[in-house]
Image (cartoon, rainbow, N blue to C red; front, top):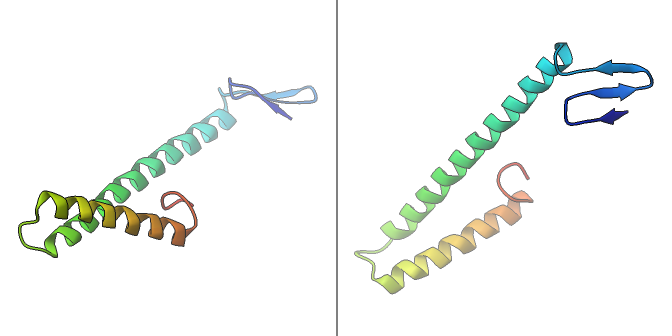
Length: 92
């Protein structure tokens, strides 16, 4: 089987193109994949923001050095969480 950029599968002499059922199914799957990526990215941003807020709220009126230390601590915790879940992001 050979796939080309026009959503065409060639297998022997038969051909399925992007204009029929196959094309609609591929379109649905691609749209779903894009939506999942956006959703995961949004959730990761929210999680990072919440982590940062928790770290900053631990102290009173942090200095610049304390904020930088908190950012380093946040990065370290995020890296540990990513390693724990076995990959980049929630998708692994």
